[in-house]
Length: 183
Ligand SMILES: Nc1nc2c(ncn2[C@H]2C[C@H](O)[C@@H](COP(=O)(O)OP(=O)(O)OP(=O)(O)O)O2)c(=O)[nH]1
Image (cartoon, rainbow, N blue to C red; front, side, top):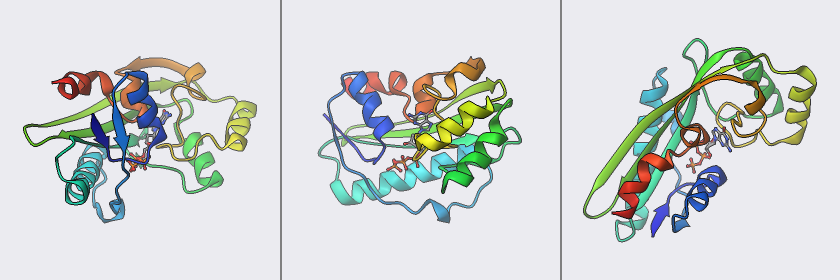
């Protein structure tokens, strides 16, 4: 059993798909305080902040799992969750037909061990179809997702090249974490 200290339904879904027993206990951490333009540094500091908040709130009786995910855009810019529909459209037009990296940093900490992984999955997308893009924006499925991206959904048909795990892109590199969760 682990404690997923995240409000993310994507992360919960991934743990369920991999038959990993967990309880879900979201924690608050203000990511606005992080001062960096580097996606890897951002997810490291954001996830570390979530871990510190989780340990203060729950202790280590049940191993803690936290994570943070952002997109590094075509020019390396950090793309986070869209604020609203217009922001989602702006971001999606930024990544349409472009190469991006989706970066996730996860920390797994128990009383006996501390495991950290920072991974990226690289994509090259074909240009998004305008009608499909508007339909996706209308659906609201982009909400709560870094860069308004759904690699297993809207973005999937446009993937021309991929390098890395889909789970990393969805917010939690479960294949990498699992051996440590079962130990
Ligand atoms: N289903 C899906 N979710 C994605 C994809 N890319 C990113 N995400 C999700 C994973 C995370 O829930 C979210 C990234 O935001 P954060 O890392 O800040 O986590 P979130 O605010 O959701 O929860 P937390 O801060 O952990 O309580 O985007 C994707 O391609 N598919």
